[in-house]
Image (cartoon, rainbow, N blue to C red; front, side, top):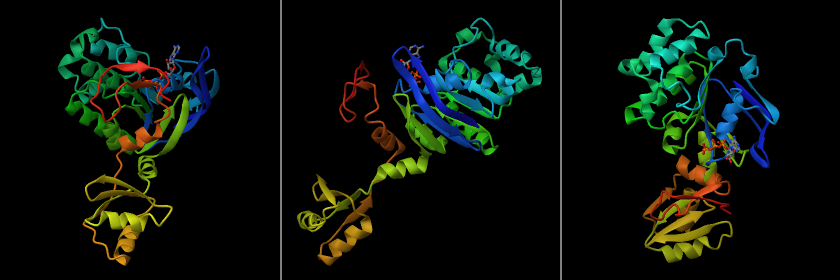
Length: 318
Ligand SMILES: Nc1ncnc2c1ncn2[C@@H]1O[C@H](COP(=O)(O)OP(=O)(O)OP(=O)(O)O)[C@@H](O)[C@H]1O
């Protein structure tokens, strides 16, 4: 369990994290989302005592990280896969970490096997690819068999097999009753891995709810209607002030403020033919984009639907 209360980190005039409170519960994967610069890494760093809060507090399994006698057995963290001695082999890195906690060599072999490092374990960590570095970071996080795991972008650089493996690993750890906090910008992966989401923007929590709730809140009541009598249906629907109608194609209307059964009933009463009536599904990505639309500090120059440019500009989006 991770509990943050009024957690704040200020750099000069800038609030990287601003009075953030949340609880990350055991037995589930909690996704930690937010646009670039929203304060995710700073929050994670404060959880494991790498940054000192300006105000507020955060505990892991009931105590501040630094007060745990054997922190690797409480919290396993992957924050920066490059933060290790590049001249050491992966095995030597893990053995050095294990030695600080009296963890046996057999556990080092176990995590090497579990993370697929196998043949690479004898190579210098500094020569690792991004994906192999991530595997080593995950191995390090698992070393103390901790109750709580904190992983910042663990699938970054992993091949598809690795992404699938991380998903299964995290779901398995949560099913064992552990607490898992995971940050990732990959919404499709988050939708498959997380049960609960904490979304931050400009240093503040903007949503703290289950994945299902976040998606259904964004869904609204949009229904796609295909009818050869769109002008007549539009006229019937526009008599209701709560209903909004937008034409999205020939004979296709997007209707908000009503449900599929209500639209069907109104159409039937007016003797209108409908070919299709579909509640519009919202993906987690859509829901996230809606939630954070006004919270993005660093935005690409191209609009989401326009041909994309990889160049990003800094500036106030609003
Ligand atoms: N050491 C520092 N000194 C000054 N400002 C910092 C420092 N660390 C972070 N910041 C600022 O705090 C804000 C939050 O940064 P943070 O890295 O926590 O965001 P993030 O949500 O992890 O972003 P990303 O998704 O890009 O990793 C940013 O505006 C960042 O520039």
